[in-house]
Image (cartoon, rainbow over all chains, first blue to last red; front, side):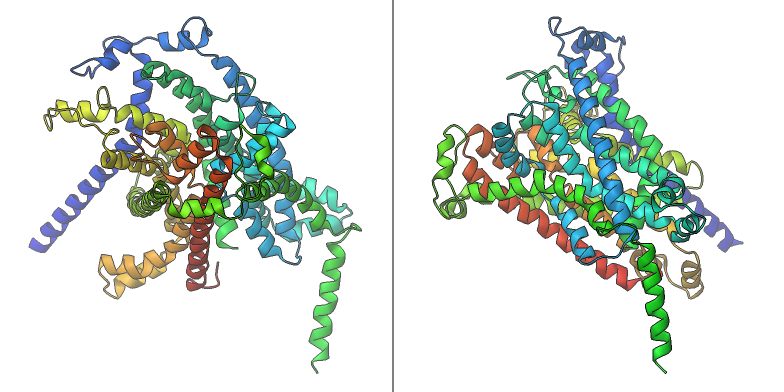
Length: 288
Length: 317
């Protein structure tokens, strides 16, 4: 009886500790984001108030209205930045996916010499920090005259994303049994048809998540974009965020609003993709 | 005697390679060609160019200086440049702290979530939340929160009565380093957590039960059963993190820009400053090569650990 009571007490304490730990961890993760959203909705006076105002007295969308109302009214050219970000991210993702599919298929289905070394070589190109790469790229792009163009950034992002798309797609194709494509070929498909009608549909969820992964990297990239863009012609949102910082002052509310605009597409896409992403990365790397 | 099985395998290999070779040019070569072209054009050739220019006194403002060859003088200057070594040391320190703490916290987080009986899906989604934030956003967000005047942290500390003065988070060198570390850890612990969680969930139940039957303490079970199994997943996360470790540039650039007075300068902010603000491209490229070697070193270390851990848990993978 006594042992039972002690045991159940111990169990209750453990459960409570687990709950509290979980709650604290989740709160730490969520709090910064919630704080940004809240700050974007309250007037600047409240943000700057001393002593701090914890419960907002009024909420308004003024910051968003000001942001989208153009350069003259204290806004920044957000629409231009948004358009640039979208064009550059989507185009580079599509190209990186096409190239990654070819490469990933080669790694998953064929045996050839130096396979492991080539794979490692691809991965090593990804170790070059963006800022280190930006120095020579800046020089080359300046010579070619493609600084501050969509084309230049798209090229850079394709190269940035290709190693990862190859890795992920390789993993997903390996999960598709080889026999299926062989069976289709015995039934009279060409290799090309077998690929598109059997293997591609099976690997599609994985390929889609590789695409979203690539999109997020392009959407969030800063080090290259900050050096290779100059004006509204090609500036992307992460670079545009800096428009809110002047020499000594920062428009916190405006920045928070732009941050929310940036995070919403990323948030939505990541929710869609999360499951496949982990399985893809682990199968590609663990089964090696 | 030995001829028969041999002949069998040769025939099946022939059949297979016949099946795999419908084109005249080797198919894998054609399929990999686009990857090679893109990586060569955007990464390899520019890097060779920057390797060359690290042997010149190249300045963006005087383009013809690229033809002056000065040998290893840029590298010599690096070895005697105190600022550079301080930044280098600080970068290694930041990486070491960040990666280790992220690993421990990620492990803790993954185990908390794995133990939860209800709402696991929602918990997993929340856990991945910071991964969606652009590093620039993370930097800005923590700059806002650590602001000595209007920041959330100081406001909270003052409201709770823990301190009555504004702590200069981003102005004092050590405190700024801690603030940057916090931002780094907040943004990337999720990477470790999701991989370790994937490992925990893929883990078979039998060894755990066997350990309990044999009378292992929870700590022993964790140390000798769970951890060896989860380790490869942790090293995948390490490898990925070491690949994109240059995120630190974005965060530091926004939060302190290497300041105040270079007290939080890391390798990458120093490179950007030397290359663009001071326009000394040659010297900056020499520094960049150091940064690249640092990245490759970290990646190779984790790759080898991954291979080790993989062979340790055996062939069923």
